[in-house]
Length: 100
Image (cartoon, rainbow, N blue to C red; front, side, top):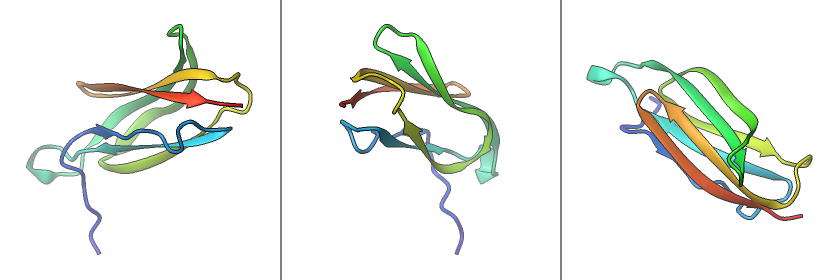
């Protein structure tokens, strides 16, 4: 079976949310022009409510496709956090809640 390549960038809401202590983040990277599989530099970072970067989950070139990353927040306090996906000209940020 052929893998389905996403047609556009997408960052899904983490699940579960609220979470304790782990949560999954799923994102999708589209193919390049003419449906060719493209590699792009991907950055997925976690920020606290003050906007300080507290974790980098992904910082590498990745092939078009869908990805799932698990964040273990066992060393962080309860509160609101943000995760941001950046790749090429795409950037999106979403909110998540850690409850102890």
